[in-house]
Amino acid sequence: MNKCFALIRYTAAMFHAMQIAEAEAIELGEYIAVTDPKRGWDATRRKLDELVKQGHLELPAPLAGKFEFLEQMHREIETMVFAWRIRIDHAANRLAIIPNTDFTPDIAEHIMGAVRIFMLRLVEGLPTTQLTS
Amino acid sequence: MELLKAYAEIFADCSYWLASELPAAYERRLDESSAGIILDRLGIFKDECERLNLQMTLSLIKDAIPYAEGWKDGGAALLHDAIHNVCDLFTRELSQQLFMRINAAGRTFCDDPSKNWQMVIKRFGRSLEMSKK
Image (cartoon, rainbow over all chains, first blue to last red; front, top):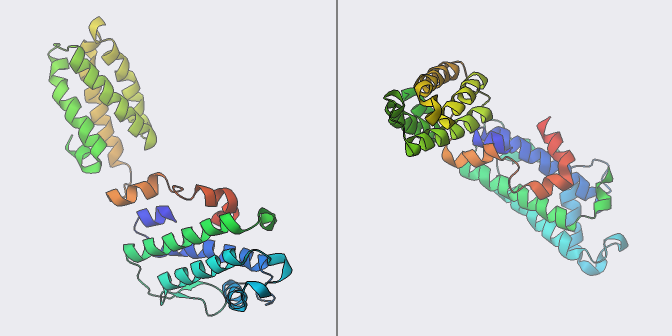
């Protein structure tokens, strides 16, 4: 991703960023027990949204005490979506760059930064046992 | 020598110092300081050639370094021709390489693509590998 960015291949850098974000969103989805048979970006986002809206008192037992983490992840996902808004499509439960989209260096760096923070928060909060698959 | 300046600061710097100290070698009036400068620059040049995998130039630099080190013991007489050979071969070898220009801001992304991502790579290396496919 970073090499693509350095070589001014911003769309390619965004492709890598999306792949990273998507793979780990699925991982997060498993942790929060997404029930949607179609595992993917939107399924995780919806479930996270639902959990956060329900509040910490309604959290399922396996997620007890993890409300702050979930709230943080919810915010980080929304930050990513905000960073790439109108440039990346996630309607089909997958992330896809909208054809003919141009990424300026600033936008690309913003998206890469948002993905990096999302990943760092996951490193902090996702139990390591979740990462065995 | 002009070609060197076009590629990178390091080569421009080396070419400047080597060129300015070369007459001293030619006229066999090298002193401690001139020999030291030539030796330093050859060392930097050697590291850069290693980094860029310019093997032919690298081997000539390795031949030239002992002449600079032994400048008091007759090395000075051979140093001038050795450096000329280095510069000549370097120019030829560069002409056979494809170079991509990276602006200064992008250099760190290319030189150290995992910078600021080490924690993420340690934990989620699998998804980063996936993103390369």
